[in-house]
Figure 1 (cartoon, rainbow, N blue to C red):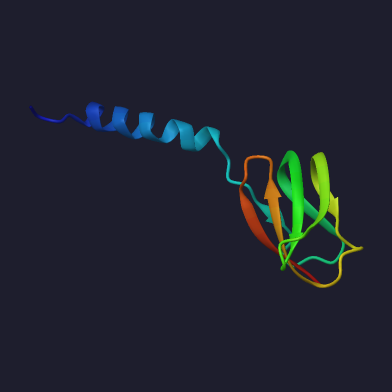
Figure 2: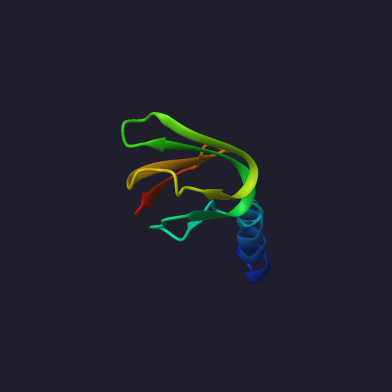
Length: 88
């Protein structure tokens, strides 16, 4: 069997469809002092460096973190994706 360019193209397109539909969770700006933005609307939980949940916000794409003590935090979305956040 010879592979044709159409066969290869079909494999590439089929393999990437799921990845294209699922946009990676991102937060910005990072570090931040006041408002943290997410690239999609989701529920988020913010944990401190000791793993204690310090904030939960539902159905949003922005969070006011100005009340958090400066330091390192972890932001987890509804899908379980977790990112590191630095609050200054």
